Image (tube, rainbow, N blue to C red; front, side, top):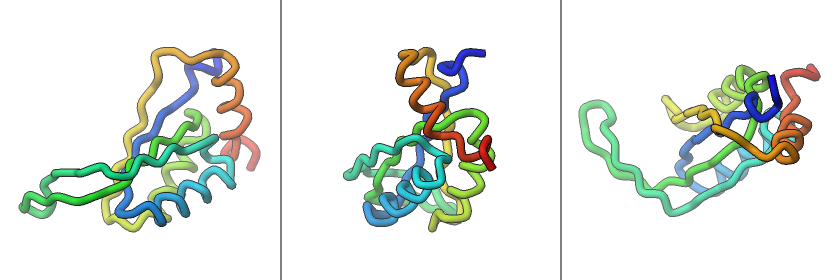
Length: 113
């Protein structure tokens, strides 16, 4: 299977930029993610425990691999402040070969442990 087909884009929201930056940095440092983009200013409207809630959040867009995902998900869940963090893994339809190789090389934490 090509490296491009092994890539995952993972979306996750955080309550504030500081926590998003801290956790994102930890996942990149441990090579469970190749990079993370932080998008502040997201407004989320959702149902929680029977009530409609509205929160200002930061959306994190992680790039990782299918092989690293189990360890990535476990680490993100352990570090995240939410009881039920949003962890949505999406498969890109395609990616440039050079970028896919870079992600593969830099999100290898699960394969090298």
